[in-house]
Structures are given as C-alpha cells and as structure tokens.
Length: 555
Image (cartoon, rainbow, N blue to C red; front, side, top):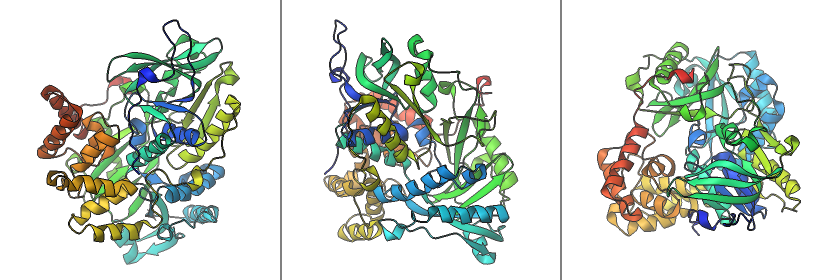
C-alpha cells in the first residue's frame, strides 16, 4: 500500500491559543528534514512517540543532497584510529542494504598506488566487517579485498594504473529517495511533516524549550508549534537556530569559524568502477553513475555564513586543477567536460583549524539540559551510513528525557516503507517480464527508485500514454512528475527534478521535458502561467553551471 505524504496543516498542529494558553503538545518536534532529521523522526514515531517534522526547504535538500552517494565503513577513519566509528559504520552498511534494498548496492572500489599502510588498513577493514558481511539478500554480499595488477587493474580503472587494491563498499545511487524513504516511514507511523516551514526561533517558557515559532514559506502565515522536546537537526544551521533568539543564544556556544565545503562534478564516464585518488590535502573518487563519472568530494574550508554559501565557478575550476594534478588522466579535464555540479556544507562536530579533511565524521548529541535549558536536544555531524544508528541512540535519550517508556527499536531489522523486496534482482527481472509492453528501462528504473510502489506507478502510466513516454536515456517518465506532486509532497518543480526524480540531476533538462513536466504540475497544483514561468526558471538556474566567482565573505 502506498504511503502518501501530505503536508501537515500548520494551523492544526499543537500550538498556543489567542490567550497564550498552551494546548497539548506533541512529544517531539524535529527541525530539519535531511537524513538525520528524517531518521530521528522515523525512529521516534516507530517507537510510539508523536512527531512533527519541519524544514525551511525540501526533504533531503541542502547538505543531504550534497553527497557522494556512498554507504561505507570509512576506510580513511582508520588513519585517525576511529576504530569504533568504522566498526559501527560497517555494521550500518549492512543494515542499510538490508532495510533499503532498492537504494543500496555493492560498489567495487579501486585504490591505486597502494603501500603497506593501505594493505594493512584494508585487512583491518575486512576483519572489522566480519559478522556484518552476510546480508539478507545474497546478491548484496560484499567480497573481501584483493590485490589486482596489470590488465585487470587497467580495465577496472584509468589505463595508467598498473596495480591496485580492489575492495567493496556500498553505493546509494539515489540518496534523495533514501531520505524520503526514512521520512515516509515516519509518516507511516503517524508523524506529521511540513516542508517550506521555517523555524524562526525556539519558544521558551521559564527554563525549558516548549516549541517553535514557524513561518510558512508557502502561505506567508505565522504559527507556533508546541512540543515536549525539540530536536535541532538543522545540519549546518544548528548554530544559527540556537542563536536566533536571546533565550537560546546562551547555549549555542561560539559560532563555528570554519565549515567544510564539499562539491562534486559530473563528466563523461572516465572509469568503469569507482577509483579513489589521494592527494596531500584530501581525496576524491571517480564513481560511475548513470553513464557518467561523479567526481568528488572536495574538502575546502568555508568561512562565511551558511545562508551565503553558493556553488561557484571558482570552486569548480580549482577542483579541476586538483583532479588534473592527481589523477594523471590521458587528457586533462576542462570546464567544457563538466556537465553538472553540486555541493554543500558539512555539519562537522569539530575541526582542526582549517583542516576540514581531518575533522571527525562522528555524530554528536547535545542535551542542553547540561546548559540549564530543558526540552532541547541538538544532533550534529554524522553521515548517511550511520544515520539510523544515530537516530536510535537519540531516541533512547528522548525517552529518558520524556520519562516515557518508548518501545524497543526495530529499525535495524524492518524494511523502510516501500522497500520490502527480499531479492531485488530477481524481482526486477520478473517485473520487466510482466510488463513487456513498457520500455524495460522504465520498469527497471521504477523498481529501483520506488520499490513496492512501482506497480502503482506503472498503473498510473498506463492510464495515459503521454505519462508513459520515456523522457531521458534512463527511461524516466512523466508519471513520476504526477506521482511526486500527488504522493510525495513536492510543491516546487525543483523538488520534482532534483529530489523526487533524476530529470534534473544530469544537468539542465531539455526544454520540451521542462515544459511538459511544468504543465502537468501546473494542472495538478493550480499554477497560473506566471507561476509556471517562475518554476521553470528555478529549475534552469539550479541545473546550469554557475557563472559567478567566490564572494569575499566565503573566505
């Protein structure tokens, strides 16, 4: 059964009445619908707590969308002796593959130019993964690492690589939909969600946070939402939220002096399998994705305000210089080779001066009761791989704070909503065979991107031939646009093109695809012509390469 996500009606959420008298509050208000906030919402709702999620943007936007799409143990964390983090990450790597089979896949990775340190590191990696190697679906078993050389090394990587180590992690080709699956799972357990709902400040009574004041960016209305505990999961904005009012600024601590900018470039496919390259100040990879190479990430110190950050042409050209120095490609990459680029700021828990590459990726939970302010928990740092475990630990804390006996966690052994497909590859083949009248690219894409909702999408496409015509080489169809606005709470065309589908994630879409999608969304959402033009312009701006340079405030 499809879980339809509908935007919470902010007027109907627990609030204060006209006399300032509180009405019953929800247990947990989560501020932020990225992967961390969505995972916390699912964990809390599935364990019996009432939950509201608010985000000033879309689900899984900002930092959660600025990802290299890996579910990994964190091989480089071993260099800092973060053995506990690596062990947890390897366990969660398997759990993610188990509970989200349409979204997580084995990823062979080539590590060239290795020495004794790398060999020892991968041996330790394999040892730590022992016991976490066998997945529910045997097709997703990850082999141990091995040494490759000669023809095999060149075939799996760039031709200049004569020997390397081959090891396996996992990749999530569509992290935006994985985030959506976590939030859908929260909704399936009763959580209420409102995107484009900006929390301007936290509501404090006495020495306790009891909710938040919210500006509805879609209607312009102001609201107050009450909660017994507020979870600040705002990613790079966690400090901004705390410092937004005098009452909570005292627990915010000093503003971060530096954040880590990470960007990715999309080019023609350069390697058949993921290849890692290490340089003096960081690392990046060439990862095959949708017939292209995804190159990244960077690790660049950023000193400006979070809201001022923008992807810049300077960041792209600087990264191209680094790639050409380290990767030793037969032909250097130029700006003309870059089809699309994206990025964001990482919510690190600490940094070592400007060494954002060396900063820990461990997650951090702060109960502000230690600062004398009850009812407020900040969660920061972390990564996709450990988001479920981080959420489980956070909800354990929330249960203690609420003095409530929350149910035991089941998220480690329960499929995410829409993901209950025990053997994915045979299921894909069976669906393609069952729907011979549909382009097989489309059937396969729908199963891998929508899981158990694929039959409903195919039925929607069958209702109108225009909805079933492929729009790109991957086989995406117009029915996905209609599905996004009807069932997946996508109020803007950018949400549809960048986070519900892949129609915009290879760069600027064709004009006819933009026009057809916009007209369909307009009919469904009641847009006037001027609104259609605005929505199309926003997609174009988001999918074209930037032409500006870094502003002085960015350092």
